Amino acid sequence: MKHILVINHSSPFLHQNGREALDTALIFAAIDQHVSVLFQGDAVLCLKPDQQPQAAQLKDYFKTLKTLDLYDVEHLYVCQQSLDDYQLQTESLSLAVTPLNASEIKTLIEQQEHIVTL
Image 1: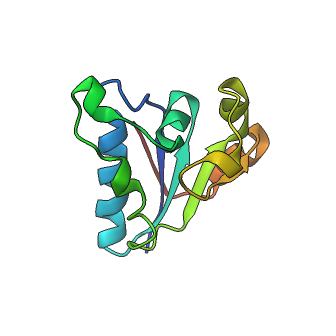
Image 2: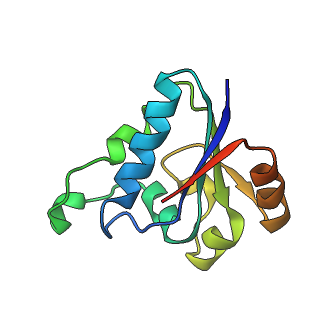
Image 3: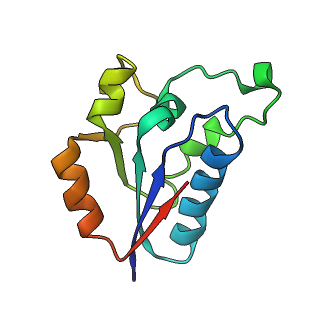
């Protein structure tokens, strides 16, 4: 079993990177890899509740975020600085995530065997 970190940097409404990061995490989890996901930068906006992707004519993949737990992707992290930049609190997010500071993110990255950044 490999330790894989999927880092999502992308805004939920810019391109399909957010959706692709989610799909990547689910694919690795489906083949029994130890998957962690880090939301960083604009990607923290994926965690805001009550998203309305149809307003941007996008498919609603936000409901799929809640399936991460079903695939045993239980290690979900968020960059504390990014939360601060968007004035978000972990208690108000749509998923239970662990906030990490820059030093903790560096440690998390060092612990991984593979990193996928989208």
